[in-house]
Image (cartoon, rainbow, N blue to C red; front, side, top):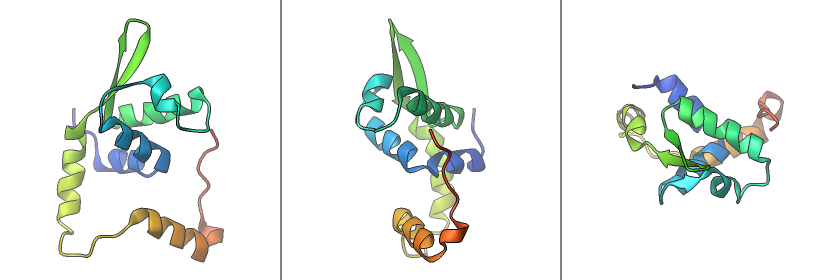
Length: 115
């Protein structure tokens, strides 16, 4: 099932979710291992994992008593194709751009939901 670009990009808009995807590039991981490097509750990580799962970017399965997360790279294909259509433009560091906007337009900054 292919998710909409809006759903995929909304899921990718959060730095924690991008970090989780980067971690899952290496291998499947148990939810508790995904949560380990972050300074937030397991419930907050679970919310991030739910967003990634709903966007089709990861899948989750229970193996025994442990819930595992697996990257679903095909889910990024449509977004990648869409982004490649802008290939004639210089690459943009989105994290740097986000920091720039927060500095230049602090009143327009949107606070992330507190987890």
